[in-house]
Structure formats: structure tokens, C-alpha cells
Length: 265
Ligand SMILES: C[S@@+](CC[C@H](N)C(=O)[O-])C[C@H]1O[C@@H](n2cnc3c(N)ncnc32)[C@H](O)[C@@H]1O
Image (cartoon, rainbow, N blue to C red; front, side, top):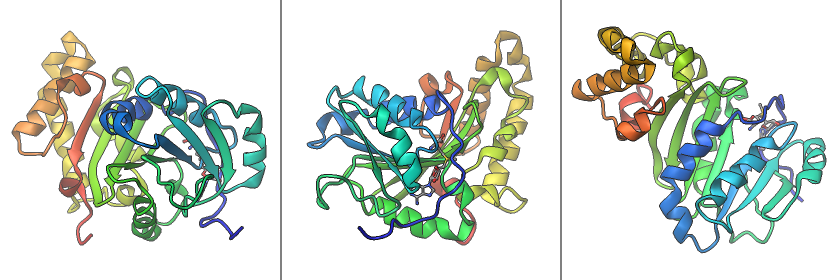
């Protein structure tokens, strides 16, 4: 077998860490997953233990009962460590950004999820990795690439279709939030070094904090109402928010990629 593309990095993971991302994927990708001829998803870089792959399978099966998940890891020791978790619909394989699935080269995943993987690569690596991964997607498939804290209270991810990046989603446990820009420390690799004046993502987080301050009176109704009000203010101010209040209620907001993309990209 050819050497997998990429490098072994820290394997830190935690049970339940990616629940916000899993829920979003099941909702947004649900229609595509239901009609997929081959409902296969990849958890790329699942880490030292395969909990995130186990949980992704459970979440996808609420949408599509015969969904399958392949956990791909570039560290062979982590593939061996995952074997006891193999079960109906869940397999593990040694692999990297080439995303070679067991069952043949013609097989294309409807989802590639890469969480907390690119964070340890260089910013300059990101465009080529995205291009390589999205080229592996089934038509209508989605690459979800992002970062979160150790216990999944703060999360930011980019959703990328076969044609290129589509959206950026911010998701947080609202009770733990001082201000929206607390999420800056969890920006994905493509954006984290761009949170500086003059860059769109910095302007967005600055305006989000301003909206949060304006919405302070809503705090008496709870952090959720304050978040919803803040997102509404952002949308009224012209930021291309693509989702609705049912997602905002969960401490999420999704914005079109073009509005946050680094200058010159
Ligand atoms: C920090 S862990 C993330 C674990 C899990 N996804 C999570 O979010 O909790 C990153 C993992 O990605 C793996 N990795 C890094 N580059 C990879 C690549 N090109 N292909 C597959 N796995 C990779 C590393 O070996 C490591 O186990």
C-alpha cells in the first residue's frame, strides 16, 4: 500500500466532544444522506481512541439506519487500538488525505469529517488539503473541517462541497460564553491566523461582540435569547447568515464562507 498522505499528529480526543458538529451534520446533510446510494461517511483522523467515529455512526443512523462510518487514521497504532470498537456499520483503516475506502477506488463518501486534524498543520497546507478531500466526495457530499475545545463547548467549522467552501458555523454552549469572540481561539486553521484587523473574520467577530453588547438587555431572558437577538442584528447588518432561529436556539450560527474568507484567497 502507498504511504498515506499527511503526518501523524497528537491524538487528543474525548467522548462526546463533537456532539455539536454531529448534530449539525445530521441536520444539514440529512436529505443527501437519505437519498445516497452508498451512505458511507469518513471520520478522518479520529485520534487515540475512536469515540468520535462511534458517535458519528450513532448520529447518522438516526437519519439513515444503514449508514456506515469508516474511521481513517494515519497512525497505525491508533488503527489497531480502534479494532475492538469495530461493529456493524463501523470499520477502521490506515489512511490519510487520499481517503482510500475499503471496497474500491470508485467508492466516494457522502461525508468526510476532519475534526481537530488540520489545526496541527501549517496554514499554507490547507487549500491543497481541502482540494484533495473535496475531490473525493460523492456528488452532493460534504467535507466538514474544524476545531473545538477539549470538551466540545466551543466549536467552529467550515463546510465544503465538491465545488469549494460554502459556509462557516460557530457553535457554543451559551452558558459558558462571555462574548462571541471567545470562539476565536477555536477558529479552523484557514481562519485562526486571520483574526486580525483588516481581515473579514476579525470584522465579523468584532461586530458579533458589538451585537452581543447591544443585546445585553435580553440576558435577563437567558443567554439563548441574547444569542438569537445578536444573530438577528448581524443578519440585519448585512452579514449573510444562512440558517434560522431553530439553529440559533442551539447556540449556532452559520455564515457564507465568502463573507469570512481571508483576504486574497
Ligand atoms: C487531535 S486528534 C483529533 C481526534 C478527533 N478527530 C477529535 O476531534 O477528537 C488528530 C488526529 O488526526 C490524525 N491525523 C493527522 N493527519 C492525518 C491525515 N492526513 N490522515 C488521517 N489522520 C490524520 C492524527 O494522527 C491524530 O490522531
